[in-house]
Length: 499
Image 1 (cartoon, one colour):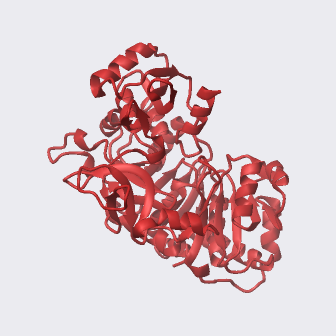
Image 2: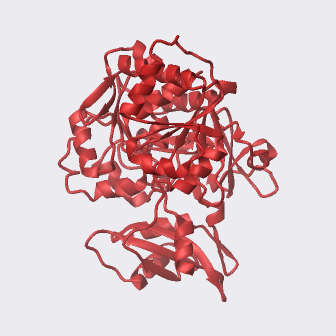
Image 3: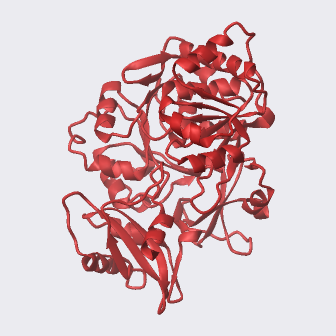
């Protein structure tokens, strides 16, 4: 099923309904469908054939996102390129994907000149309009998806060279089906996209479109404007990573904003403090977790707003540190080091099966085989399933700290630190230590206008999880380095502390 299905399905529910909105100006479903056909014709005239790779380099922009459906109509493969990457990193991705056609915003023109090696680079604006006009009289194009692969997504490369995740039509169909069956969708949804459309915020548009929903796009991250747009557009669904939710909780306008239209406020992409999540449930409302990765997009496990509360309506605090239950169309298990599956409560690597899992890494059979060992997709996350079927993620395998012969999971230490009122965000890593092998080290970002001593934070953690797991070193920084989706970059923290 082509990506065009979601757009065309939404159009069938109301051609003149708003589809993509930015700054109060909307493109209707009719207009986005028309634009997608025009892009497909222009791509075909430019020599793009089914299976060719076409990149989009843009900040959040309705026209740029509409081009995704034009790429799909041409039978080409959508390659989202991260607008926050440098020229060298984006050139590496474009070469990795065999991508020679790039559609980009004007603001990225200098970056595109640095990249080079492209057969065609089309700049949104007058150049884009002329490119479409040149093919306006060409016959319609409606090609099938190329070998079922509809998108190639970069893994980011924070732990080495990036890999290209091949996502099929079935992967995104499964993700969309899980979304629609796992979370509340009443009537025609309105989805507010603040996070980058090149990541989670983009693929969540597909199930919203299948319901004929409106997507309100934010070009820049601004939590004050986010709150204003929720109230103005009566937003029903949205997604933010935890770092932006923490900023939202600290914003002076939160409690005076009417959030009554919200049906589902997704969070994910990084671990969230259970303490802050409980606060969000009380002050924001229908929080909804999703856990996934590029290789199994978004919906390995889900936790609906209802799952965050007990039958009597109180906050289910015992579940807030979980990642929800394995989603309906996915099989999740915990695997030991030798490949055997573990019983509930036992900790091991989280592994996944089902049609949510990628086709493999582009032109990288070795990495594909490694990720699919023993017939399961290996997530690289350490966790366990409890007796009620809730999945708990305790760490990334690579982030576990071995100190004095004990395994310490950084996520557990981070949760303990985040329970302190002065802590806004934190990251825990292991650093070389002559005595302990590795010492548990934390870098902490404090709440605005707040002070606390490192020794007080260490004592606070010791009271909760004991002295073995408590940090032996705490650094207080004004901010933490983050990726474009809000994940704290521990590799950069480690590099800085070791320099």
